[in-house]
Image 1: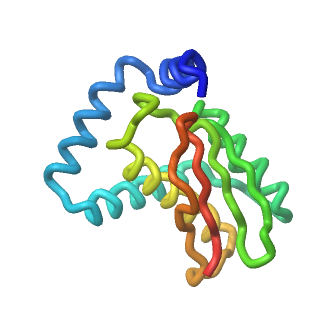
Image 2 (image 1 turned 120 degrees about the vertical axis):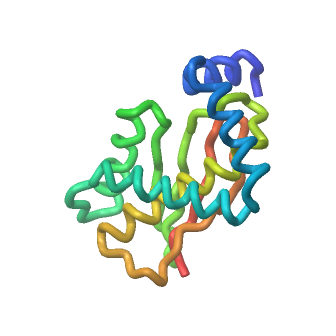
Amino acid sequence: MDDALLQYLTERHASIQWRDFIEALVEEMSAQLSDAGVTAIMAAAGARFAARFPLGACNTVEDLERAIAQTWLDIDWGWTSISDTGDALLVRHHCAPRSRPDDGIAAPWQAAFLTGAYQHWFQSLGSPGLLQVTPASPFDATGSMSFRLGR
Protein backbone atom coordinates (compact mmCIF):
# COMPACT_ATOMS: atom_id res chain seq x y z
CA MET A 1 0.00 0.00 0.00
CA ASP A 2 1.30 3.44 -0.94
CA ASP A 3 2.45 5.38 2.17
CA ALA A 4 1.24 8.67 0.69
CA LEU A 5 -2.25 7.20 0.23
CA LEU A 6 -2.34 5.96 3.82
CA GLN A 7 -1.14 9.33 5.11
CA TYR A 8 -3.84 11.08 3.09
CA LEU A 9 -6.57 8.81 4.44
CA THR A 10 -5.32 9.28 8.01
CA GLU A 11 -5.23 13.07 7.74
CA ARG A 12 -8.53 13.27 5.88
CA HIS A 13 -10.50 11.04 8.19
CA ALA A 14 -9.14 11.73 11.64
CA SER A 15 -9.49 15.38 12.52
CA ILE A 16 -6.36 16.59 14.28
CA GLN A 17 -8.25 18.09 17.23
CA TRP A 18 -9.73 14.66 18.04
CA ARG A 19 -6.84 12.24 17.36
CA ASP A 20 -5.05 12.39 20.70
CA PHE A 21 -8.32 12.59 22.64
CA ILE A 22 -9.70 9.48 20.96
CA GLU A 23 -6.45 7.57 21.36
CA ALA A 24 -6.25 8.48 25.07
CA LEU A 25 -9.91 7.55 25.60
CA VAL A 26 -9.48 4.18 23.89
CA GLU A 27 -6.29 3.46 25.83
CA GLU A 28 -8.02 4.30 29.13
CA MET A 29 -11.11 2.24 28.33
CA SER A 30 -8.83 -0.67 27.44
CA ALA A 31 -6.94 -0.26 30.72
CA GLN A 32 -10.08 0.00 32.88
CA LEU A 33 -12.38 -2.52 31.20
CA SER A 34 -12.12 -6.05 29.88
CA ASP A 35 -12.12 -6.55 26.13
CA ALA A 36 -15.74 -7.71 26.43
CA GLY A 37 -16.61 -4.53 28.36
CA VAL A 38 -15.08 -2.25 25.73
CA THR A 39 -16.82 -4.23 22.98
CA ALA A 40 -20.20 -3.99 24.75
CA ILE A 41 -19.92 -0.23 25.30
CA MET A 42 -18.83 0.47 21.76
CA ALA A 43 -21.52 -1.78 20.22
CA ALA A 44 -24.13 0.06 22.32
CA ALA A 45 -22.68 3.40 21.20
CA GLY A 46 -22.86 2.22 17.58
CA ALA A 47 -26.53 1.28 18.02
CA ARG A 48 -27.26 4.65 19.65
CA PHE A 49 -25.46 6.38 16.77
CA ALA A 50 -27.46 4.45 14.15
CA ALA A 51 -30.72 5.36 15.91
CA ARG A 52 -29.90 9.02 15.18
CA PHE A 53 -29.84 8.23 11.45
CA PRO A 54 -33.00 6.29 10.51
CA LEU A 55 -32.71 4.78 7.05
CA GLY A 56 -36.28 5.11 5.85
CA ALA A 57 -37.93 2.52 3.63
CA CYS A 58 -35.54 0.04 2.00
CA ASN A 59 -37.28 -2.47 -0.26
CA THR A 60 -34.20 -3.99 -1.88
CA VAL A 61 -30.59 -4.71 -0.98
CA GLU A 62 -29.67 -1.87 -3.35
CA ASP A 63 -31.96 0.54 -1.42
CA LEU A 64 -30.37 -0.59 1.83
CA GLU A 65 -26.84 -0.18 0.48
CA ARG A 66 -27.64 3.29 -0.85
CA ALA A 67 -29.24 4.46 2.42
CA ILE A 68 -26.43 3.21 4.65
CA ALA A 69 -23.69 4.39 2.29
CA GLN A 70 -25.20 7.87 2.14
CA THR A 71 -25.37 8.07 5.93
CA TRP A 72 -21.66 7.30 6.23
CA LEU A 73 -20.73 9.58 3.31
CA ASP A 74 -22.65 12.49 4.85
CA ILE A 75 -20.49 12.34 7.98
CA ASP A 76 -17.23 11.45 6.19
CA TRP A 77 -17.02 7.94 7.67
CA GLY A 78 -16.49 6.12 4.38
CA TRP A 79 -19.25 4.17 2.64
CA THR A 80 -20.82 0.73 2.47
CA SER A 81 -21.32 -1.92 -0.17
CA ILE A 82 -23.66 -4.86 0.47
CA SER A 83 -23.90 -8.16 -1.38
CA ASP A 84 -26.22 -11.12 -0.92
CA THR A 85 -24.24 -14.36 -0.65
CA GLY A 86 -27.34 -16.56 -0.56
CA ASP A 87 -27.16 -17.46 3.13
CA ALA A 88 -26.08 -14.05 4.45
CA LEU A 89 -25.53 -10.42 3.57
CA LEU A 90 -21.91 -9.36 3.29
CA VAL A 91 -21.42 -5.73 4.33
CA ARG A 92 -18.16 -4.08 3.33
CA HIS A 93 -17.42 -0.83 5.16
CA HIS A 94 -14.90 1.18 3.14
CA CYS A 95 -12.48 3.82 4.47
CA ALA A 96 -13.59 4.24 8.08
CA PRO A 97 -11.64 7.06 9.74
CA ARG A 98 -8.52 5.90 11.55
CA SER A 99 -6.26 7.94 13.80
CA ARG A 100 -3.18 6.18 12.36
CA PRO A 101 -2.73 3.79 9.42
CA ASP A 102 -1.42 1.09 11.78
CA ASP A 103 -4.22 1.72 14.29
CA GLY A 104 -4.11 -1.57 16.18
CA ILE A 105 -5.55 -0.18 19.43
CA ALA A 106 -8.62 1.43 17.85
CA ALA A 107 -9.51 -1.44 15.54
CA PRO A 108 -11.43 -3.60 18.08
CA TRP A 109 -13.54 -0.75 19.47
CA GLN A 110 -14.16 0.67 16.02
CA ALA A 111 -15.24 -2.75 14.73
CA ALA A 112 -17.61 -3.05 17.72
CA PHE A 113 -19.03 0.42 17.03
CA LEU A 114 -19.72 -0.46 13.40
CA THR A 115 -21.16 -3.86 14.38
CA GLY A 116 -23.60 -2.13 16.74
CA ALA A 117 -24.61 0.41 14.10
CA TYR A 118 -25.23 -2.20 11.41
CA GLN A 119 -27.10 -4.48 13.84
CA HIS A 120 -29.39 -1.61 14.82
CA TRP A 121 -30.13 -0.66 11.22
CA PHE A 122 -30.90 -4.24 10.17
CA GLN A 123 -33.16 -4.79 13.18
CA SER A 124 -34.93 -1.45 12.64
CA LEU A 125 -35.81 -2.66 9.15
CA GLY A 126 -37.29 -5.91 10.47
CA SER A 127 -34.36 -8.32 10.59
CA PRO A 128 -35.14 -10.99 13.18
CA GLY A 129 -32.97 -11.00 16.30
CA LEU A 130 -31.57 -14.41 15.45
CA LEU A 131 -29.67 -12.83 12.55
CA GLN A 132 -26.52 -11.22 13.90
CA VAL A 133 -23.92 -8.89 12.45
CA THR A 134 -20.42 -10.27 13.01
CA PRO A 135 -17.03 -9.13 11.75
CA ALA A 136 -15.98 -11.15 8.70
CA SER A 137 -12.53 -9.61 8.20
CA PRO A 138 -10.20 -7.30 10.12
CA PHE A 139 -9.60 -3.70 9.11
CA ASP A 140 -7.14 -3.27 6.29
CA ALA A 141 -4.73 -0.36 5.97
CA THR A 142 -7.40 1.82 4.29
CA GLY A 143 -9.86 1.43 7.18
CA SER A 144 -12.04 -1.06 5.32
CA MET A 145 -13.48 -4.24 6.79
CA SER A 146 -16.29 -6.72 6.18
CA PHE A 147 -19.24 -7.80 8.30
CA ARG A 148 -21.68 -10.66 7.85
CA LEU A 149 -25.41 -10.59 8.65
CA GLY A 150 -26.59 -14.14 9.13
CA ARG A 151 -27.20 -16.98 11.55
